[in-house]
Length: 551
Ligand SMILES: [Zn+2]
Image (tube, rainbow, N blue to C red; front, side):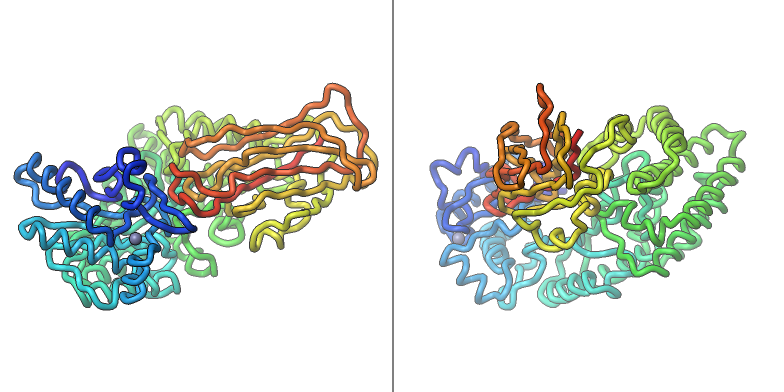
């Protein structure tokens, strides 16, 4: 439908910053005192010359793709990277929404090419509609509900209500709406995402508010939480938003899982009840650890496993059905491993067996990825052994207080002083265990309480571009006996990493000759500002640390 696959985040493809950025920085967003030509920044939409260049480009794309009538002209995948130049700010102020400049620009294109249709995003910072300008009928609004929580329908929680307000606003000014919905945990595909009970109400809501097109981003990759059932239900609801979802679910489960169906149905409904009975929200970037006290608490984990045991038993004679049940069980196995990682007291031998079985199954079933960042499940297992199983060496910093010379950002400053020395390493989602600083360098001191012999110091950092968490530039260790005068151990320079995969980096100093000291100081020179190639170009980025090991 979309010409030359221009369907979302197309600004940079239409007008690559790598080509135009140097010669025409004025085409790109102005903020924080300068123009930011980049893959994730937006255009200076009030620039008349820019409009002509884009219009010519669009003309040539349609000429090269006869028969196509629709194209996406939409913001790059960055956040708050829109232009704040004087002219753009004036429009934004008048319209009471950042989307104002985008709609004015799109309307101009829609007028220039009246027989074509132009799709544009209403996403994150452009989610809210403008007050005055109305999209022309041949401007399509691709409205996204990415920031919403999903434990209840969108009408029933605060984040959802903000979206509903935006949806109502857009539907009052256009009949041409495309809703982009999200329905899986993007940081942990292989973890439960009990949202089946909200699908219908949300779909009905979209339809009621002029959504004539819909995309449900539910990560149908192999091993994802009920990805086949999820795709089936969404597809059926697209045909008929009043369909009997419960009957459809029974129908699919019986057809796809055979005699295991009743157990899986009970599993789905039990988990849904646990979620509704809790006060925890369901978010697309969560970790199973978030649900440790409710949806995934020990008594429920036990019940879920009993249900899966019964499900496997019911189809044990059928290799195809057994495989399907076991693929689905991976989400439970993965969750158990993630939960175990956060326990100080645990049965290590049992965890090793669980990890071996999980690894064997993900290999056997060829599960491609653990998350949206393309981390492989097999790599996860190796990393788990290295990072989360106890090493034979015990850190002498274990349980010792860390004094932050630079307080961590926001709520991270309130975490216990031993978060970095509790022996528990943070996982691939930043929501637990990590301590973060935003846009600043930081220093901290670990007080070992008595003079100790030190052979090495290691601190671990997180890399997750999607969450604006970047490795620091430099890490320096020094030591002191009195906590006043410090002697340098080593300065580490870290290379920039542009990989979208989640990564950890242990920055270690090993001392050729052991030293004696009571205090260890860590000075971090952070990246501080999202680089030009990053989604948040020009805005502060984070660094996250967990944990600090002293041997
Ligand atoms: Zn501007």
